[in-house]
Image (cartoon, rainbow, N blue to C red):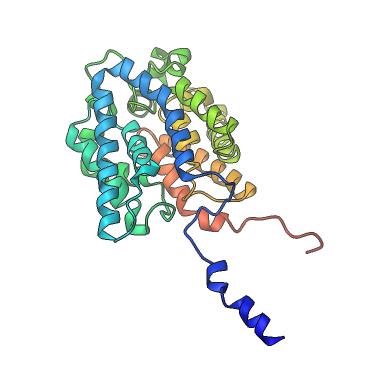
Length: 323
């Protein structure tokens, strides 16, 4: 009986192959997933071009192109297959562009696209290995390095409208009367060129949920975390803190809920961990907006929650019969 056993164990290295996450097997391809995500972003991209003009399109194009070229160079230097046709680099570059002001200089879009891939993904092993959402890594580096070029209110000063989260931070709740919530929902408030297109991003997020490319636990948990924490502050003192609806519609809350927080590599896997992840990230958004020095707390909140993902993945129900 020994030979059959040895023969069965001879190909164990092939049958127990370890690969980078995500490990959720559904028969779908990465290329198909990225196509669906890019399609979900398309309405917001169109609205951004309508609102800000061709400069918004050029920023998205330069960031996406820089990300794809950087991915190709990094893969070539690593002597790996150059598979930029799976659209992962393009999608990451566009996500970064959505957080930029529409009038961002060309070099900022290019540098951000390069950093998204080189610093956000490649240094950790490539796609699927990054512990933090890659576009947010590039956003943080650019925000700290070139704060004036990244400032939404400053770069869009030529527009008659104001950035809601900037107004809240600098002038308090009394300045929010200038904003109509329907206008914010329809994307008429200033913000990142794509992240402020709330109605289009909501439609794209619902499309991803309906087609099951993302699960509902993180987006729903994130939005509940934002609304619940804002409700607590607003109940304490409505004259000092903004109401929950403002926090949901202003800044990049919807963009973060459907496109940044559910990043497959940097978010937890199980239902309970994903729900807790969303709740923590959403709560931190309001806390950062209330006490922080940066107007929109969404990017920082999601990055902090990303670092907690390995710990959150340990949250799981006990097996039946185990005390």
